[in-house]
Length: 427
Image (tube, rainbow, N blue to C red; front, side):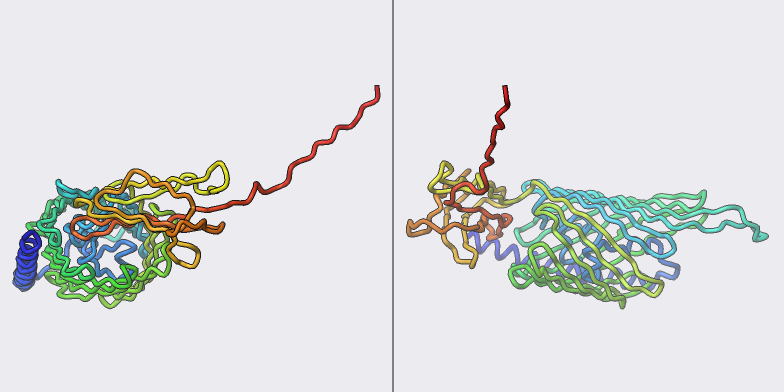
């Protein structure tokens, strides 16, 4: 009964998503016909962090990290852990964009996030009516995005940004407020759709005598994962009042659990990048985009903690079944978004063969003792073994702990024993 109700909700959510995409597209099309001026806020619309830029900016169906709210605030609902992200993009002519983002996933309460972006140009020469130099000035733009997202069903989420922007040019400055709305739907565990409409009702800025309103913008796309999540392909259409429609696409593949490579195509500009996990919780991102005026380089670092996770730790990490430390204790922890359904802990040898398997229903126990024997009760040879905890919740979502190692040794202590000699002294 519960599955049937969830299935009906999912079908209804998909219908709402498709209808919203069509409706929002028609709104942006009609607005485009009325737009005759420039494109205020172009810097924010074209903004990309290092990971989105690496896959060509096709991020509206992903957005599962703090800066993803720029594309689709609904993506916050698909985050697993608290995340702090800092990034910097270097453009030509000494222009740069720096960003700071922090997001917290929610269970009963909405997921929330804050992103601060700052664009600063290089210096320009200031002159009077007679073209006489009066010094220099620069332009600065800032955007504050306060975000919230909530799952309507397990597969369908909605989110919103309250967007506050400020622009300063020389001695003039102005601020405005706008709204972004986003939807995200998991069609399958490996296929996700996303759509968002940005700049609803503004922001509108007035630096001197004329109002400038950020044009409405629609984004819709799809993301498909493969090879158990190691790879993905994403595509996106972006329609803005004035510039029209652009295509974005890219791919990402984790060639190793610590290294991901990316290639993308962002509105006719090729891009690429990579991520490197310095540690399980610390990630470094880089991307480069080739544009007519030069290369754009983007750097970012992310730190994750808490939230929804699974973790396991062997204590001690080296033990001897024949010594004083005859067993090791696996400390297990898990915090799932839905109620925990089952858990498994696999221990594998260097050839990838499972030598010991623990499992159970519900939440994993606080700890499990292991004596260094296999499933048949035979002692395992000395060596290094890998282990990993996997917890599945009531919705079928998996939380996978970091892969760790434990070592069995039955040898005695290694090394040399120092010999101290005494030199006799004459009385």
